[in-house]
Image (cartoon, rainbow, N blue to C red):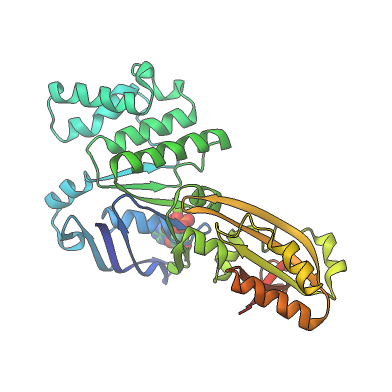
Length: 354
Ligand SMILES: Nc1ncnc2c1ncn2[C@@H]1O[C@H](COP(=O)(O)OP(=O)(O)O)[C@@H](O)[C@H]1O
Ligand SMILES: [Mg+2]
């Protein structure tokens, strides 16, 4: 069931008399139990979009359907009520530093006018859920970043939201705490079946958690797909910049050796990722496969992998090898040396091979 549906959302800012289209005709929807990733480089418009979703920022136009209502048309009292149904967590946790962990989690319940009798068991339940019951009387400064973000999650869940908005929630954390917070979020989605919109500039974070990903650039969603398909067939230059296996992964010193042989990025789905397809075609078509880079990504929907390979052999043999791989469901992109557009380094996708 659809939790939130956004239609043609726009928000501009005027800066020195020029309009910045921070959110430019954005549409998407997120279902129950689904983690929807919004990724993009800094300045893409991600945070503005989130602020528009809970109407902390008024969009210029567009619709936001949530709980059966178009939020854009609602008055303040309805909005206050609906905002309670959207939990939000932030990069810098935004906890009250002078309140205890217990009071931080209780805060939204108090604001909603609940009585202490109701608040106590709920806060205890939430602290138990995030594994911080022992820290109920601690202050945020006494906790690690990962623990503080777990308090942020408990606070966001206090009012039983249908939607959780996460804006760069792991960006201030080290890798270990990032991992802990991500697994906590996954548990929340699996246990509670809520919808999550996960905003991040880190593909590594999105890939660990998301079912679907939308890529933003200059206020627009330039590409949207399931995580697996996005990794296998990234279509937009920004997406390719954010995924391994295009630019940053291929050591420059290899390029001199590569000039004559064409180079391909092969994307493997979970069914093919463990099959010895390369040695198989190498034998059958008499081509030499020179593997330059490769990786397997464990994604929510299964593993996908890629190899960057140059093939040496008769042109016809290489063609046959590529067709055979294509028939086996491998996604093939021909790569060529950097053309200066994306920093001019590495290899850049040139064309999809059918
Ligand atoms: N209040 C504001 N006034 C003027 N410009 C803003 C404001 N908020 C955001 N912007 C601009 O909108 C664009 C998108 O910003 P933001 O939504 O913060 O991007 P992201 O979260 O993806 O880094 C940027 O160019 C930013 O400078
Ligand atoms: Mg931001």
